[in-house]
Length: 223
Image (cartoon, rainbow, N blue to C red):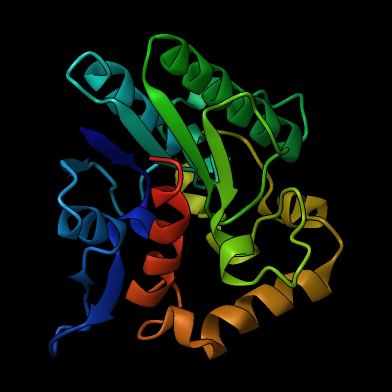
């Protein structure tokens, strides 16, 4: 059994399908390609989800015949909504992000040590290569190998103020934005890439079924 764990990028292709203007899944992406090739697969990706929620699900299920876990990382600051105590107000925002991401990697290693192969997939950002997991790949690099993606970055628009304010974490949004890596050209290049390329049509925010096929072909080599 293969388990997929991630956020909206793990859910597949999204589009507006009716007059309500709401996004819906129109193709299950990686999950669908696995099933088309007769792999047993369960997808626990959740739009707006966090690494913390994903890792908790995986930890619960690893004893239930999950032989390979495909873990699609999302932005680590989402974890602060689920576990506000992780955020140390005495430390910079990005130090907190790094520490919670390292916790996720450590927990994934423990899962792998318990006989579940872990395929780590970078989503909206990169992490240091070769984390001693079964396999490691980057969704961004697969879609555009010509770009040298940065180790970690976050788009200010994705730092949802609600995540922080609702949990009464004292943080100045402007100070967070000021901490963002200064390579604005890389930021603009990435979001222009998302808007212009056929790999992100139809909503321009999530990889489409073509992009998921590229990811699937890379993952299939590891299965």
